[in-house]
Length: 78
Image 1 (cartoon, rainbow, N blue to C red):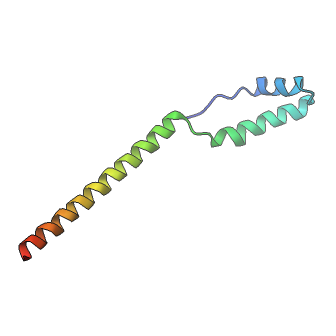
Image 2 (cartoon, rainbow, N blue to C red; image 1 turned 180 degrees about the horizontal axis):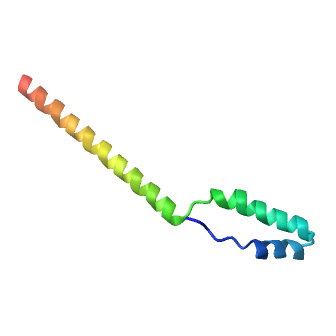
Image 3 (cartoon, rainbow, N blue to C red; image 1 turned 90 degrees about the horizontal axis):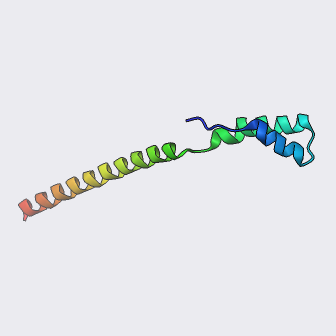
């Protein structure tokens, strides 16, 4: 999911702080291209958490099934 980044507002803020226009615009574009691309959105995080929850649930289910299988085998042998 793309995040809107106001490069014009960012460069204006840099210019008001004393940075010349060319440097401010270059810095704003670099921030958009390199920093904003690495940010995680809430929906990205929610999707990752859902996958992790599913994986953990499946692992727990598999461990319980194996445990009950071993227990049933041991009870038959004794």
